Length: 152
Image (tube, rainbow, N blue to C red):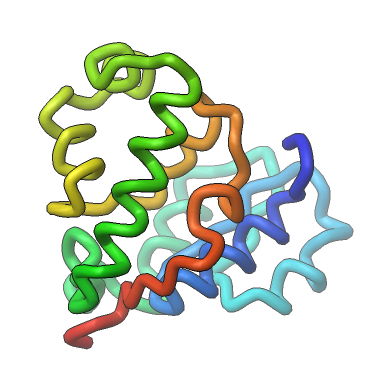
């Protein structure tokens, strides 16, 4: 990954959402100790077996039934700030809502909701947004204080 390595991305993501479950899957076992400095659920070395994945999912730090659905947030101002940032970056890249939606494989309504502060992207879609828009996480969220753990 250009700019940041997986451990640095995980640290940023955990700053945003401390209840995030992260499982590192890598061919580099020498990074295991460094990875566990980030609050991760597991570290799996390739090749990955079905049993290893099942064990990891069975031992998540925050089981799915306890996780926040659709990123609950209370601070509408900050959700609106993220929405404005996403809209601005998309427009700078000269992409229509439909073009961006097609490139990250979501509906144009989803992009519309993100850009109007009705919803915020989950981690997977945030990664796809970063890739398609050619930005880093800090370019999207710097100076935005989203409370991903509201209501927990």
